[in-house]
Length: 300
Image 1 (cartoon, helix red, strand yellow):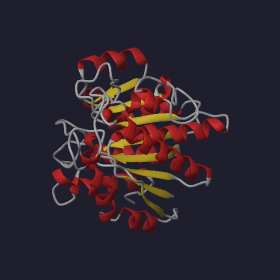
Image 2 (cartoon, one colour):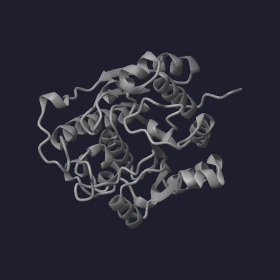
Image 3 (cartoon, one colour):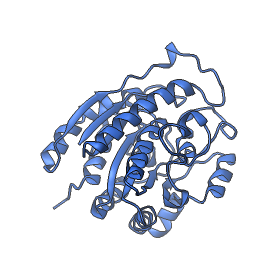
């Protein structure tokens, strides 16, 4: 396993997620994975990422896009190399714009072997805005649009193929906060969406079973991109964009446990942990526990 830190803090409107990788390490991620057995953990350290104070935002519809694209390109190279070395890539963010690099690398690597990937995007938000639909210009709300072949161009063109993922093999889970124009983007894209209302109605086990079936059908496996704001702020206060009404503790773990049980997990992102807003590092500790569940840790 390769642990890749990405202290990227340019994609959101709130500072602090650049400290996310450190918070997760402090929570003992590497040691706890190693203690499970089955993985040799190699921490590759953090990629270099500039801070907003040293850069100009430039285009207000996609703020800091050049710098974000450069970081994503470096991450793409690292994740691709990890796959090529036979290692499992675990990417720690940082804001969610980094997924343009991590998911893109998984997709291109699998495509190079004549296969394709599924994508499960676990998030309170759709992250399918484009520069034309965004209200804020924050790029962390755009990476999934780029992976599906849309704008922003700077992220969509990273790597070898465009689009990186197929809409009919892409599943959003836990959605509860979408911009008005983003809703139209999602409806027109043909991605599969399970909102918190679906989870309330059917239960997390039914939703995850469907998600894994949809994303896994005819693919080599799934890349899971986990934004900690999918969890309710009561258990995860330290996130970039908290929204009430998210997954509770057991729902979050059940989702990760079912991913592990599927045997289809190819790579994992853990993003948007903001220690500035956290309480005694509890969000990073929860994120660490969820990673362990996704990797196969069992209650008994």
